[in-house]
Image (cartoon, rainbow, N blue to C red):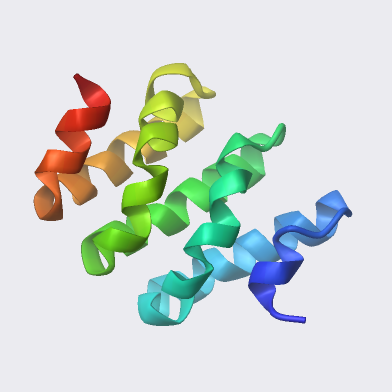
Amino acid sequence: MDLAALAEHENRTVRHNAVEALAAVAQECPGAVAPAADALRPLLSANDVAIQHNATGVFGVLAATHPDAVTPAAETIADLRSHGERAVQQVAAGTLARLAQERSDVVESVTD
């Protein structure tokens, strides 16, 4: 089982640890995590601030190097920037700022 699959595991602790590990891997090698973007997208809506925070952070790293992997999640990230918990709002704002450097059209479409 890979980390992306574990990020969808039924056990909250397993999900949390998997997303945290993916965030750490993304810092060192974003290309290794980019294929997991689709699996991470539902975690942006998780009822767990730590999971939302780490998942949003992964998208933030990917925004600079693999913006097309982030584009499908842009609307959800914009919603988190406006309505998420404070820590998640900050990470979401940074993620959108990074994405805007590569794909300003996408960010404009979800923030207007």
